[in-house]
Amino acid sequence: MNTLYITLPDSYLGAKGETLIVRANGVKELQVPILNLESVIVFGYKGVSPEAMSLCVENNVSLVFLTPNGQFKARVTGETKGNVHLRRTQYRWSDDEQKSLQLAKRFLYAKIVNAKTSIQRTLRDHSEKVHMELLESTVTALDQQLTDVKNSSNLDHLRGVEGLAARYYFSAIDEQILVNKGDFSFQGRVKRPPTDRFNALLSFLYTLLSNDVTHAVESVGLDAQVGFLHRDRSGRNSLALDLMEEFRVYLADRTALTLVNRQQINPKDFIEKESGALILKDDARKKVLVEWQERKRDEIRHPFLDEKISVGLLPYSQALLFARYLRGDTDDYPPFFWK
Image (cartoon, rainbow, N blue to C red):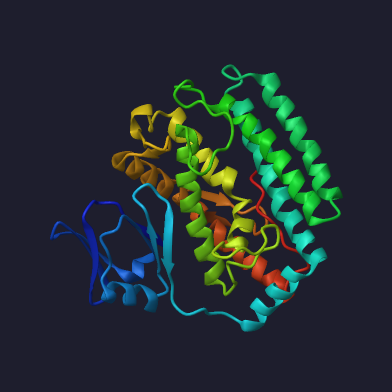
């Protein structure tokens, strides 16, 4: 299934029969059958017709509105589907400290393992270009954080481990940027707003990933807002953020590094706002979207299911495995480990 990204300025989304139609300045640019889509992401403010919105809702195609620079504004979906008993179990477990701790450990352990794998791959593939001692010491530090995850006795302590592990991991990102190091210098994660080019790229990719994971969670009947590692906060999709931890490095961070190191994205692809925030230009955003879709078409063998699936289906496979665990069909939840 595909995501339709509408990035053209002055574009308007309409519908005719069972198809969506994109018009820009009154000219039809694209017509696509609704059955070919899983979501539509609109960058900008021009609008969507009631007919197009209804067509999306009736066919379980999520409609997401972002600002031109990728900030989330709104999400339109149809009625909540799925087994109410599944969601009730989700709510009960979220209120249970020990159940929440058990699941939060799974999400965080996978995140740290995948962070280690990413650094080790850089060491393997680019040993002559990187500071090996720095990256090796980061791997050692992340090993210690894995032990601390196992030994955590409450969620507050676990979140402290998460923060420290993130600090170690992000301290090694700059060393993995192999070209244009001055222009893409990365000194740590800065979110609101991103004040350097690499952080701007990460924020944009995290928005795309968040949408994919949210849709996956909702498609199996779970409540995206009720999480375990991430606690309830109005308007926050906490369960989607939980599952995202398994994919941040593998899907978003590695895509960002690939775009920079292959010089598909260059320093001139960004605009600096008066606030100091850096955002992607329109053409650069399209390049990122193309790479993102290509990445999702890659195939891997799922480490738990032992089947070949496309990378884009990983959020769905994990959402299904999570739902099966909540229903009692499996003894535990197997997070995604990058091998």
